[in-house]
Figure 1 (cartoon, helix red, strand yellow):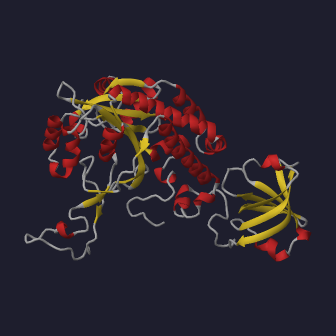
Figure 2 (cartoon, helix red, strand yellow):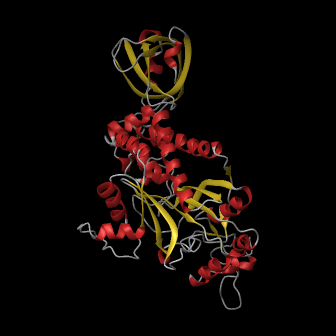
Amino acid sequence: MAGSSELVGQKIKVEGWVRTKRGSKNVFFIALNDGSIIHHLQVVVDIEKFDENLMKNITTGSCISVTGALVASAGQGQSVEIIAEDIILYGTADADTYPLQKKGHTMDFLRSNAHLRMRTNTFGSVFRIRHALAFAIHKFYNDRGFFWLHTPIITASDCEGAGSMFNVTAFDILNPPKTETGSIDYTKDFFGKPTYLTVSGQLEGELGALALGLIYTFGPTFRAENSNTSRHLSEFWMNEPEMAFYDINDNMDLAEEFLQYLLKYVLDNCKDDIEFLNKMYDNTLIERLKTVSETKFERLSYTQAVDILIQSGQAFEFPVSWGIDLQSEHERYLVEKHFKKPVILTNYPKDIKAFYMKQNEDGKTVRAMDVLFPTIGEIIGGSQREEDYDKLYQRIKEMHMDEKTLWWYLDTRKFGTAPHSGFGLGFERLMLFVTGMANIRDVIAFPRAPLSADF
């Protein structure tokens, strides 16, 4: 329905779903929406010209085709409307059972009807914005010479060393083959070894960067953590660029440029949807997006951040000391109260970070970076990667990881190693920030979480 005002005076055909129908004995007004924009098109129906049963069966949720003249509207709320000459009813929606018949449904109710919730104004806006953000990610990297690398969903390695992964097997889980010692004999499984759904495409992405220079991944990732909260999903999307010859400072520069580009793209290209969400859910949304998109991020070390938190006088739920993994309350204090702008923290203690991060000369910290946003906390995590074979191998041993499953990763440090860096963006976390939604299950079409895989 976009650009409809340019067609005033012409006979047109429109198709979509009925949002509302109101009227009197002589005329009906139908609000029609085809999903392309948030605004509805008003259809004016002269009742005498149409079959009574047809009009009766056109209810909220039904799908129709309308042919008629597009004219300027004298009514409030729309600039144009269509005078119906012919109506075809594609699909009815029983008024007694259609879940979205009424307005004002709770978010919990809409989550339980995820198969229909995209027809609402709220979720129409959310998923149009999601498309725009995904497109902007590809455009950003393409315009800067990056190559999109399709990394595997099935993997034999645990990128983070966390162990919270979904197993992939072709076995009958009730009767898997056993070894002589009674353990599961994975040599007889489909891949001949234990395999999992990936938690990250980073390690494979590094292989691409050490051949193609600049790459990025963008796809679904999986965590088997039993976290049933408004901030966790079991299936979510990650964007992970990897760049050869980038150090930690280059990495921070790219992350800041990237995030600000995405926010500006949404503000420029999703104006109506952002304004709707600003009005209905978060009246500081537009201001926040503009501020973050235009403000230089603060950069400081983890150690400096800990000192600020300790001296803040705040009564945090989780006490602060050097060496802890900062919690969301700590990150948001730094962003929202102390600096009042996005923050990039660097040089974290190596004991709380992944094995692949480049070690600093102090022997205690690594060249990690986390980008912290208001309302969200960490939105990007990354690092300069350890390119030294001996240091990387030793770190793998220290963390009791199986180097046999990472032989291919170690090989890149033996054959033409190079300085390189990268980061990971949780796409749904960015969606939370951009839309003002409070629950991460409301920014992905079909959320996967503990005990939730209905659609």
